[in-house]
Amino acid sequence: MIPSVNPSGSDTRGLLYYLYDTGKHEDHTDPHLVASFDGMSPDPGRDPNATLTDLQQLLDQPVMALAKHARPAKHVWHTSVRADPGDRILSDEEWAGIAHRIVAATGIDPGEGQPGCRWAAVRHADDHIHIVATLVTEDGHRPDDFRSGARAQAEARLIEKELGLHQVAPGDGTAAQRPTKAELRKAERQGRERTPREELRETVRRAVAGATSDEEFFGRLAAAGLLIRKRTAPSGDLLGYKVALVGDVNAQGEPVFYPGARLAPDLSLPRIRERWSADTKEAHAARKEEASRTGPSTPASARRGTASALWQAVLVVDDGEDAVVAAYIAAGGEVLDALAKTSAAHTRRELRDAATAFERASRSHIRAVRGHDRALRQAARDLVRGGPALGRGEDGATTAMAIDMLFFLITATAHWHARKGHAQQAAAARQAADHLRNAYRTAAAHPLAALNERGRRLRRTVAVRQSDVLRSALPELAERIIAEPGWYALAATLADVEASGHDPGALLGDAAERRELDTAGSVSDVLVWRLRRTAGLPADASSQTANTPAAKSTAHRQDRRTRQTGPWRARK
Image (cartoon, rainbow, N blue to C red; front, top):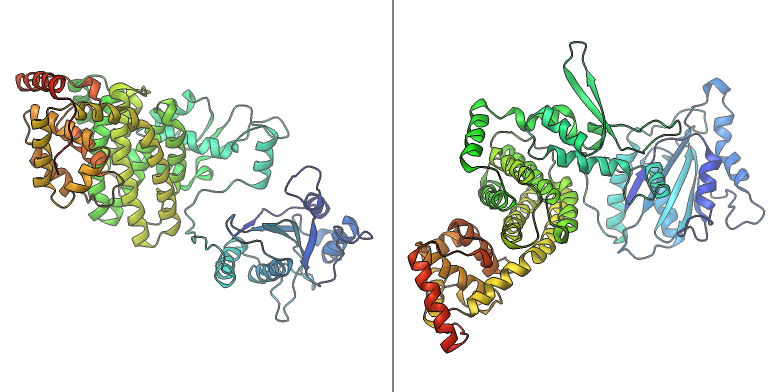
C-alpha cells in the first residue's frame, strides 16, 4: 500500500473536480465519499442534491474564517493511498478505516480530543482513495503535519500487516524522487512514455558511466542533446549543474531545468566527482599506457574485459568491507548503464529495464569509498569507447559472456543488501536480475546453439574424454551438467581449452571453486563463458581459429571421424 503525499495546493474545488470527474479518466468510476472529518459531509457522487461547491465550502470554512492576511497561501493537503495490484479489493468500510488512520498518523486530524483539520476521502477506483484536507484546524491553527509523507508510509506498513495485504519494503530515504502527479499528467499530454525527470535521470546516469572528468561528463550530456546550465562561484569554480530536455517547457515557454540532485541523490556534481576523484595520476598513466599497448577498444574486447572485471567484483561483494562493497555496487551500475547504452537492438530493452531497476539498488546509507572500484569503472569506460555492439558473431557472444557475469554480480548484490536489511535495494536488485536473465537468453541463444552443434560433432573419443574430465573435476555436479541441453557446448569448449594448450580439468575446477554453481539455472552455460574467458578463447564458435598445430590436427581428426561415425552422446 503506497500513500503519496502531494505538494500543498491552493484550489480545493479544482482538486475535487478532478476527483469526481469521470469524463477524462478511465479509472474514475462511481466517485463517492468513503469517509470525512464529521461523517456527514455532502457527497456530490451519491447525493443528487449535493454539489462540489457544497463540499468545497465546508472544507474551506476554517480557512475562510481567518483574516485574509492570515490565510495560508497553500492550504490544500492531498494524498492518494493505493493498494498493491495483487491485493484483494477492499470495501468502502475498510478504505474508510484506512483514511481515518492516515489522517491521524500524519497530524491532519490526530483525534483524542485534539483539534484537527477538515478532510474528505474520495474513492473513484477499486484500488485507491484520495484524501483532501484544508490545512487550518478547527481552532484556527496550522496542523502538526511535519514529515507527513514519512508518517503516512509508516502507518501504511502497519495497515498492510493488520489487513493481510502485500507488505511494501520500507524505504530509507535514499530513493530518487518519484514523478509528481503534475509531471505524470504533463507527460501524458505530450505523449511521452516517461516524465522528463525520468528521461533526464537515465541520460545523466549513462553520461556518468565511466567518465573521468567534468569535461568528459558535460561533453556526453551535450552529445545526448540535453540543455545544460552550469552554476559557478564568483571565483569561476564550477559548483553544480542543471539539465533540461529540448521541448519540455513551462507555461511561459521556458525550458524546465532539473538540478542533478533532484534527479537522484548521487547525481549532484559533488557526488559525481567522487567517482573519479579517487583516480591517481599513476592510474591515469596506466590507463593511457594500456590503451596505447592494446590499441583501440572494440565492442568484443570491451565486453571480454568487462566480464573479467565483473568476475573479480563478485568476490569483493561476497566478502569485502561494506564501504568497498558499496563502491563496487555503484560501479556495477555504471557497467550496466554502459552495456545498455551500447547494446544491440534485440537485448537493448531488457538491459535498459535492468539498468533502470538497478538504479535503486546502487544507493544506500553506506557511503562508498572510491578507488577500489577503478577496474569496474574502466570497464564501463571501455564499453562506451568500444561503441555499439552487433548482435551476432564475437560481439554477440561476448555480450552474453558479460551479461552472464553481470547477472552473478547483481545476484550477489541482492544477497548483500538483504543481509544488511536494505529491503528496497534487495528487491530492486532482484528485479534487475530478472531483466538480465531475459537479456542473457536472447544474447546467448545463437552462440550457444553454434557451440552445441560443434559439441554434437565431436569425435566420440574426444567427447568421452571431456565427460571424464568433467566427472573428475566436478563429481557432485557432473551428471546434472551432462543432462543439461548445454552440455554439448561445454564439451566443445573443453575440447577447445585442451587444443589451446591448457589443462581443461584444472581450469574447470578453478572456475567452479570461485563461485557456487548449484543455484545456477544452467551450470553448463556458466562454465562455458568462464572457461572461454579464462583460456582466451573466442566467445563465438564461428570465430574459433586454429592457432596451434594441435588445434589444427584435432579439428581435422574430429571432422573426419564425424563423417564416419555420426553424432555422439557422452557415456553415463
